[in-house]
Length: 276
Image (cartoon, rainbow, N blue to C red):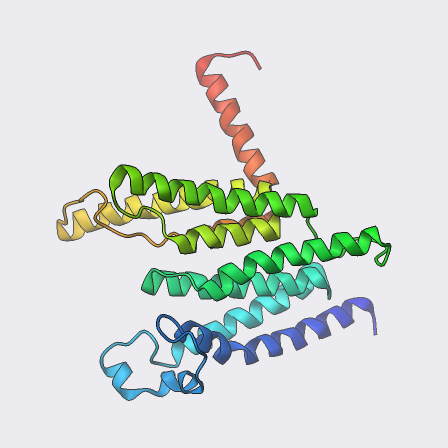
């Protein structure tokens, strides 16, 4: 059997295993809010007749199938893109974790500490352990996913500190919470895993995506329902946009953002008549 055939066989097996995790992903999503203990009863939420009747988020089988399809697709694509290894596993874990965070934050405006807080220390621990293993020559070369430990530490501090500063500033100036602490801890975890440069890119991309969606929503409500916009009166879940920016950087790297910035700089210079 050729190496390509082996890769496809492993990708198929990964897809099957990913599909099998679908009910567990749904179970994890149904565990919030208020059900932080993963009780077995939540595996049966899809069969709750009363929940379907009253439009409960957790009822119905369709979402289970969608979660399973997502997990299977990401598992297979990760193997095909990176081959069997650490980066493929991390790719699947990141994508599924971001799915859970995005859905829960969109529905309930909370981000589970089980993912954000644990993401902080596991990211720091992973890169720290790899750095120690490389220093002790227990590893001949870094694994397929690795960030220098200082970049990981600075990424955690920058991610946590930047949004914490915004939260405190909003509380001081506006006398109300402007940034949830779930977002603060989530960006800290992203920095711990991907480093400080990824934090900056994630903030830029998340802010841009959140602004576009927010403005579009305001305009739609205004044109469709005549709803007046009231500043600071609407909560916007920022977690989904952080996840979107984070996954963009993980899968595509920083180069697309650099190219956009270079193109924008060239456009500004052309408009101002500045020499290149």
